[in-house]
Image (cartoon, rainbow, N blue to C red; front, side):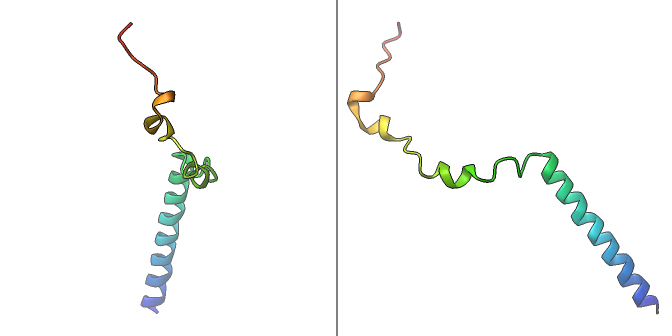
Length: 61
């Protein structure tokens, strides 16, 4: 009988810890934009580095 109460209490504590971690993740912005990551890999940001015609010249002026 003692083990049943212990397991119920342990399950309650683990459940509260999981809920607290979920609330922390929501408040810290982990779920703000879940769609952006899969589109970010499709962006070609390195085109300007390899194409000399599109490079910006910085001569210090």
